[in-house]
Image (cartoon, rainbow, N blue to C red; front, side, top):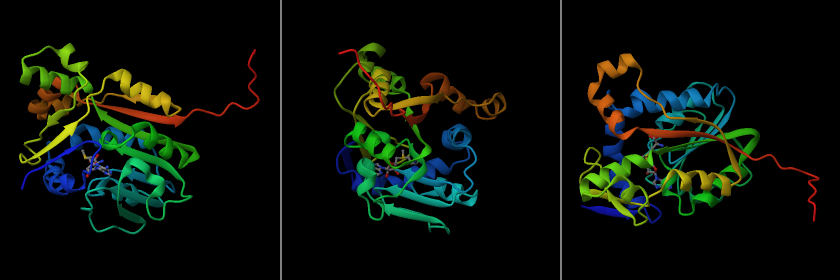
Length: 257
Ligand SMILES: C[S@@+](CC[C@H](N)C(=O)[O-])C[C@H]1O[C@@H](n2cnc3c(N)ncnc32)[C@H](O)[C@@H]1O
């Protein structure tokens, strides 16, 4: 069976088919998620003891389950695919759309110290709305951890495929087909292109400020152990990680007019 879907469309069937291959690839000893992405994400999250964590687009939920194991008090994982591991104590999984987290069952009035969009934000129907909703569900000291693939990577891939230039593809606006043969060669995702400006303007439109940005790379020792992965990063750069907080509300602000 072949599935194909747009980022923002009904991705449940596509991801239902893709999720097994994705999780198998992610679990490999040499996956970039294991070698570099999850360690960097984990570091940005800090000590999670006693914290409430919402993982939007959580995949099989293994990451949020680990956070619960490390002391997070109330954890929720949301994913459209519904292919979850057995939930450990303190973890709840919801099959649903991350485009509006507040309308999912049991989410009304819930607050979280951390909301995660780890390689899942591109699937929101309306990215600004999804971020605004997530921000409204944060506790006062809470933050969003959002990661996205470097847009340059897609531009390089498409320039090679189409015989075009990096700039032509980076600034292209047409949706494009993205297939991960190592996840499932029969599944094609249709992705919206984005530039760095698009990403930063989305955060601004959602009234978020960037506290930290990280572009994690392999340590020298790991790069030596997995030269084929170092080659991938040397060519495609990797992923971007943003720690985002709501802009403080300014009360009593006066204008000159
Ligand atoms: C690239 S995977 C990332 C999984 C996980 N966050 C990680 O870091 O390993 C993208 C995930 O987003 C989920 N997804 C795609 N569209 C979604 C949507 N509209 N709502 C919720 N989850 C979605 C997929 O099922 C998949 O598990």
